[in-house]
Amino acid sequence: MKHVFITGAAGFIGSHICDLLLKKGYAVSGIDNFITGSKKNLAEALKNKNFQFLEWDTCEPIPEKKFKFFKKHKLFGVFHFACPASPVDFAKIPFEILAVDSLGTMRTVDLAMKYKARYIVASTSEIYGDPLEHPQKEDYWGNVNTIGPRACYDETKRFAEAYVSTAARGVMKGNKVGKQLNARIVRIFNTYGPRMRPNDGRVVPELLVQAMSGKPLTVHGEGKQTRSFCYVSDLVDGIVRLFESDFKQPCNIGNPTENTILEFAQAVNKAVGSSSPIQHLPAREDDPRRRCPDITRAKTHLGWSPKVGLDEGLRHTLEDFKKQLKVK
Image (cartoon, rainbow, N blue to C red; front, side):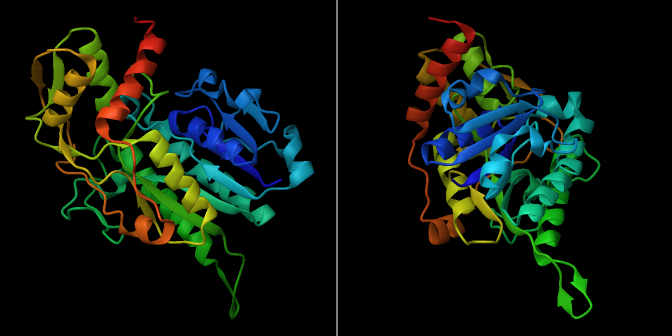
């Protein structure tokens, strides 16, 4: 069997990747330290004999001997997806974020290199910062505040890309290039769906929970800033396609349908059947004004494009939130 190792396995996106890979016949070893992940997210995966999980910090040496699949199947690939990704987390656990995408990246790259395994790292649209180019193509270098409140996330993701791409080029040894990492970089745009934390602080759970509670929908700034929301099943399909492909350049995976936050708030009210009013709050510092992926690379090289529309995605997400919050 093809054996893969996943960090952040109990997270929102990581757990969905586990489920898809198991469905495709992989053996999966996963770790998570539960800073933001939840064992509940692994309910389906834990039923599968080809899945093994260990509560572990990605920044610590990876305990290969604790996993049965390393001895049995060696290692085919590594998914480095451990990292809190909410503005709430940026303020509360910035050093943990900085560590997991620096030291954690180093440890997982070493693991992949040891077994000559392919490697994919979760990067983000945040590396484009408050973009001066629209929509954002992968060859755009970004407009990032290196000392702002989001820098713990933006900059550590940029570091992760730099580390991975350097390992992929290899280091010169005399007249020859040394070992090269078989690497892929996925730049993830705004994603939503079941298993998000209701208290996540990101716009989707924040507005959904407010609408479910009949509270005003809080919008930071004027609400004219845009986002492109991709449903999680579409996202993980694109991620796994990239992992299984031979495409080695950074690749945007996201939904190119752009909505203002005000438009999104209206869609949330419609999904919930709510008439909650809009309450404007001060704008967040360094909050991007426009965010929309150019997915030409994904279409061309992976044959991928999103399928789930916003109304359908919000309906599924709402059903999950009702279960999490025990709301009828």
